[in-house]
Image (cartoon, rainbow, N blue to C red; front, top):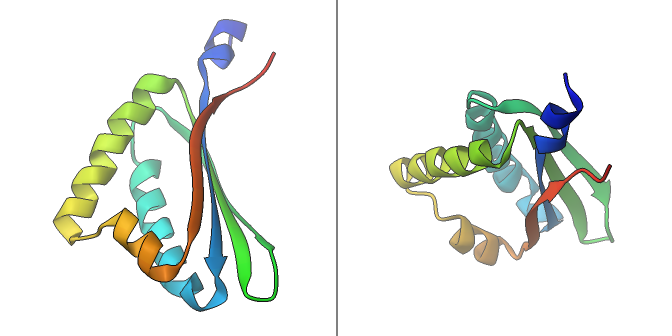
Length: 110
């Protein structure tokens, strides 16, 4: 892999503070979404990570590595279509389950 190819890589990092009682429902949805992401062009790898937060919550972080920004945009469309087909509303679910979310795309610093 050339230096220019590596420098185009993009990373989608999402962090969620999740109440323990919402863990199974939310994690099932995240895993379903990541199964779809794994099949998309430009996908390189992903990680689902967790850590305790406090007695009522834990942190779930997801990290996906993409070849470049264009692939993130394409995957976003596919995920949106999947959510529409299954009647899933991410914002409504996050609010209903009491989840706090921070989401963003990042580049590697050289």
